Image (cartoon, rainbow, N blue to C red; front, side):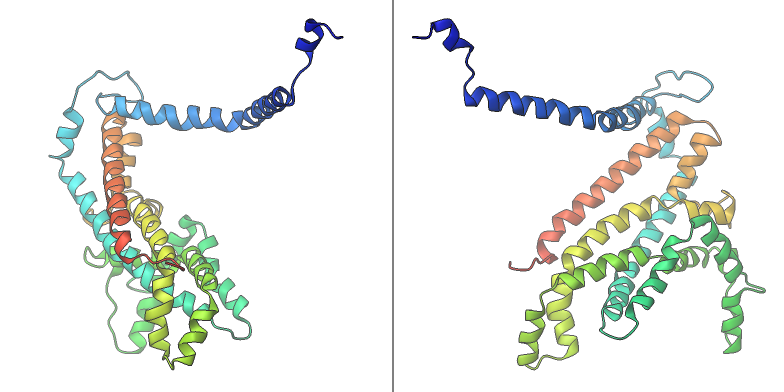
Length: 311
């Protein structure tokens, strides 16, 4: 008979399995460690640091002293801060709904079964690939009130074109027009959503004699609401972070009369032009609260209008 010492040395299948799982876990963490270190070093640490800096007068050149809520109090008395919020909200409330309306409509057109549709889809997606700086330079030329192509085209039909970027009234609509021109990425997502809708719904509607509009409003749009919901959330987040186009077009000045000074532009100026890092950190956290609150509101309302197949 084997001794008790020999029996104790034998490993059971359960112990072997646990040892194997432990080795696999360790290997997994080793492979993931570069990402985890990068997340902690370049995201978690700056995030937590910005909370502290928002309560200081920290700048790049000197260590900041703790000043409590002074940055936040100053923000609420800063006229340009409120102007930047107003410009950003104006842009978000117009651009996001328009991008959904035109995006869905364009996706439905590009979803038609006609010859050469892949070419048309590529053409509409190409503006998304243009760098924002090049896009801004292109539209500055197109919207030039004197020799711009758009005003020239309007002149051929007897319409006197507006000053566009030179007017406080037309500057933000001009920016919305530029942004709509580059919404190809959202259209691709809508196309994927349309392709996911089962054809059985349309076949049943055809049997019942439903018209195109009835199928659109009773089948397509309700079943596309999960995709619309996603683009709505991402659209608002992107709209509140609008920066590159207005900054490039105005050389960071936000002219005319600060009508193109957006929130992130003013945040950037405070951080890297005026070197008020503490003040900019406070602005960043206010922006975070606004976006989180808006996103939570959209998620709360989604229970009433977002429909999923099979529900």
